[in-house]
Image (cartoon, rainbow, N blue to C red; front, side, top):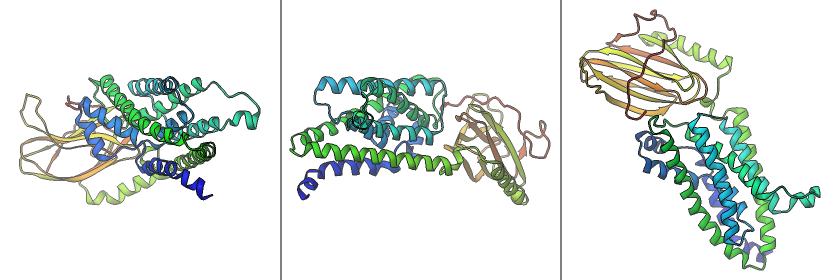
Length: 379
């Protein structure tokens, strides 16, 4: 028993490293979001590479693909099938703004890890007495699903409308660079494993562990879907909407104005206040669901050059703060909804300002009409 434990020490180390990235898999940190927002295709490549290296489910799947491959020709063939598959859906889905619930797509990706390990164990023949499906075709098909998962995450960020395709391709190049880096390490470790006499036993334990890991990840993703672990990214139920409205009514006395803004799927709008130089106002806004890209900025009165000063630029579902103006002019927000569903913004403000929308809507909170957004360098 001690002999087998000793033989497995490197595999256990590798598996621990892959699962250690679980907290970061697929998700984007605030630093990564800011890098994407600020643009630059080289940065997209960097983010793509780091994203792949922290994508534990993708790495487990690739690990399963190359587990029994010994010839370089076979490795290139099967990895290429996976690469072509996930590249197709990553580019197509992002370019056409096709999204699915990321909990559900990650759950399917987790099952793909189970599938590849079950195939490695020759499970179809042993347990169902049937021939295994064509491995190359299955890897390509499952690659399409992995690409959809990558696209769903990428679409949470504000992408440049002028260079959208180039941004997506740059991100995908980064994904491939990260995959090659991870693959090189895996192949070195697997080469060492195959020289061990205990490799047949190790392979059974390893692939059984992959099945267990895939099932565990599937349960975690389904739990997140059922209990909305990230509730802001899903539609609120009627009870939740009532709670939001109740909070608004309760806090109405603290704020001078409360404004409701309806933002359609893939839409963009802005809301501005007129302030004199040196005046101060406070604000707080939040969405009923989903994150938005926003640019909180000001435009000097009488300027005809298109100049604007950005105070805060980020992607989030809420923001609050205080601003003392440094010039006469309009001050407010530009919002971009990259979600496939409409979003409602609840904005509250108070201070020394004039509302520019009062000529269009009543003093009470009502949905704003569509406003043409100014040209922003990031969009």
